[in-house]
Length: 193
Image 1 (cartoon, rainbow, N blue to C red):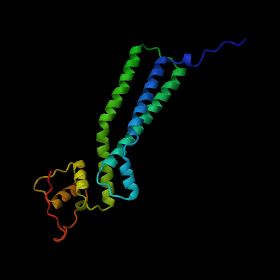
Image 2 (image 1 turned 90 degrees about the horizontal axis):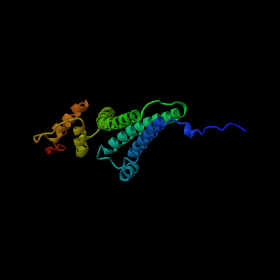
Image 3 (image 1 turned 90 degrees about the vertical axis):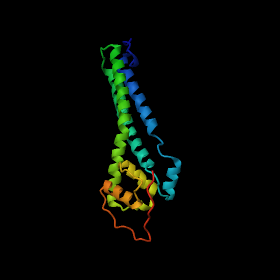
Image 4 (image 1 turned 180 degrees about the vertical axis):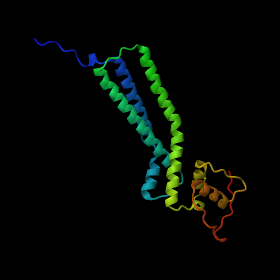
């Protein structure tokens, strides 16, 4: 009779297995939060060629990309911990598992807090690079110009005209100032908050 082998599942280190499953759980949470960040109306509008009037699709895409990368990181860590559970034994107390689980949770929360700053910085880089290569009529897209101005921390004042506000946005982006429009096409609307 052959010697009985110990089942593989019973030989796994429960401490590493718990940490591995927790990391996989965080991966799933980040994957779920990254899926479907754009709305069907935006997709249909892009498909049919309508102009975007907001930076929200760009913001959603960048957040989705960063969250997917975080999910991939947690999936890799979780898989590595689960594999290691079958080959290594941690001779640590339960408090280590609690501390490690707490560290994963803190890491996730810090990531989410820092994500908005990263996304805003990436949006500024992408927008500035794109607008340097492709001319954009800021005067014809007031809402989008206002949103770009807010992203680049351009303040509007009650005395700003459309042209003066656009000049400030162009300066913040590092774009050359365009010559003033002719008097018949000039808008003198005030930029009101």
